[in-house]
Length: 212
Image (cartoon, rainbow, N blue to C red; front, side, top):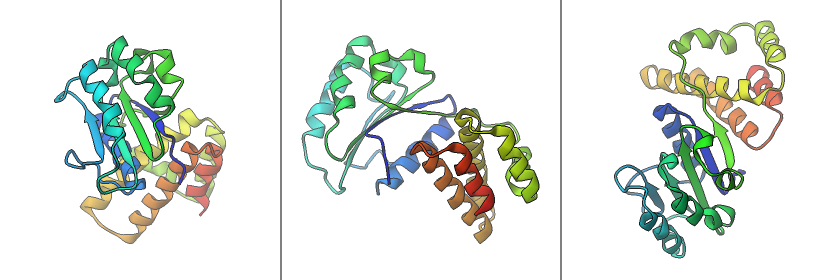
C-alpha cells in the first residue's frame, strides 16, 4: 500500500470528501471517527486558529495510542490564515514516520503554493445528478467499455472522477441491495483508484476494471 504522507483533497461535495477520507483511513487500519485517539481533526468545531495548528506538533510527538500510525485531518483548510498555513509547512514536508496529513479544500488556489507543493493532490468531481446514467459506461458490453477507454485515453482528470462517481454510486447500491457481484465490482474500482493514486497509468487502471 502506497500512501503519500501529505495529501490535499480538492472538492466541494462533502459526501465524496468524507468517502475519500474514510477510504484513506481504512487503508491505514483506522476508523474515521471523531473519537479515534490517533486522529487529530481540525474543523468548524475546533476552529482554524494558529493555536489549534500548533497543537499538531505536540500531538505528533506522542506515540500512537492504539494504531501503528497517526492521522491529522484539516477540513476546509482554505480557512487557515497565512500564519497557520506557514506553521504546518514543516510538518507537511516531514510529518515523521507513520504520520499522515489530509487537508480538504474547495479549490487549490485557496492555499499557499508552498503548502500545495508539499502535498499529493486528489481532485474530486461533483456527484452527477443521476449516477445510474453513468453506470452504462462500466456495465455494458465489453466492446462499449473498450471504446470508452479509448475515448478517455490517459487523461487522469477524466478517468479518476468517473471511477470515484462509480464507487460512490455502487456503494450506495450495495447498502440497499447487498450482493456479491456489486461487492466484487466495488473492490475492482477501489483498486483502480488506488492504482491511479499510486501513479499507475490511468488507462491501465480503467482497463483493469473493464477486463479483470
